[in-house]
Image (cartoon, rainbow, N blue to C red; front, side):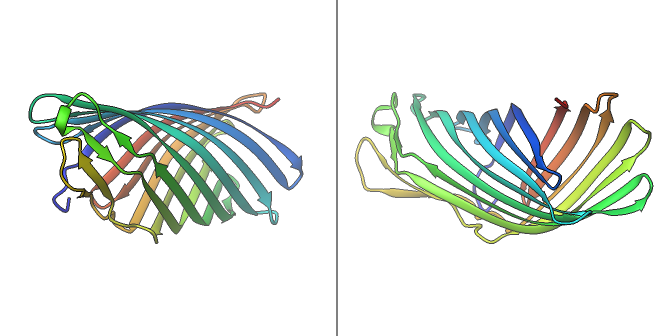
Length: 256
């Protein structure tokens, strides 16, 4: 897209959290997550691969503003470790390890409508803000072709609307679905400033400008046990123009 080669990412992870009702109308929780990602460029020559480990902590809350209206809030922060390998035309491999720090804030206002005794629809509006600061770094093992890359940062602000659906197929099994669309008010073209170890002036590597329109959809199933425990399996899709992200997840919830 826009003359820039793409990439493929394979990820897996685990999140653990606990929450409690502090009052009949307020719930507060804390979660920790780890994600492992393997990134490979689509370049025919000069392959670039990055192994990524992300650690994140998140505080979340739900405040009931009425019988069927809720405000959901999340704030999170974390660190990402990168292990990069870039093959150059001399067949040497430039290697480097570096880090980034990131933070997120999310707010969602929802209102539920009971369409029938076993079918609920919940429209919502949301705002997501994220910020990431990436450390500068110096590559090794490729002699004069090693790059020294300056630190960088990026941020997004997505505002949108969506709807969730919850259909109780039986007393234990529910079918879930949701869809949303948003607009990224901070979408901008990425640019990295670098120099070669062998000399020469600074130069910029310009990436794509991401499309402002974002969209997502998902569906799943929830099974409820005798003791109130739940097992939820979901498939989710997220996209922009020329970018797609797909995920399969399983969530286990237990009452204490």
